[in-house]
Length: 192
Picture 1 (tube, rainbow, N blue to C red):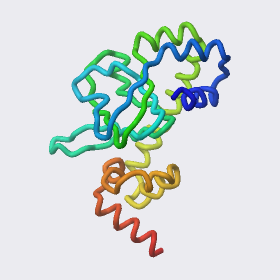
Picture 2 (picture 1 turned 120 degrees about the horizontal axis):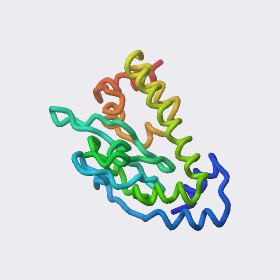
Picture 3 (picture 1 turned 90 degrees about the horizontal axis):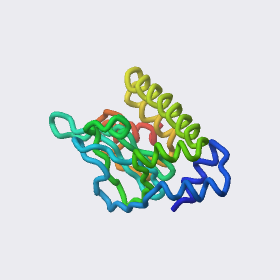
């Protein structure tokens, strides 16, 4: 279960065997069944979660009870309500499993201790946060300036596996479109 996390870490920073063994002690393993919650709106987010297997989504429910997906977390991705996790405020996001999933969880206290005991992990997380900010900026620009078709094509270009792993309804929610719009775009692309 740790192999994917270690590979992810080693892509960004150098970590030795002694540090790897210590690092493992800061995490707990968790399995989620399909549609099982990791976090519900209003709760305090107690963990950063690394997805070792499966797919999770974070989302809000709008005033009509419709899911508005914020993020998909595939194998090798992190997911959390970061504001809730860092500031111990009530979560605004719901996080649940799209399919059976295996996670590595780190608590806030363990996160702080990990970065103190293995300083290179502070750099690792900083690199993650920088990447996340860039991705969010790009997503905001795409959301505000691209047409429905351009949004879909950009998503498929960046994450080609997404159309095989996720339903039209999930993709539509993530892009802020209707499932019917996604179907029309896909039909147009296949005919074009």
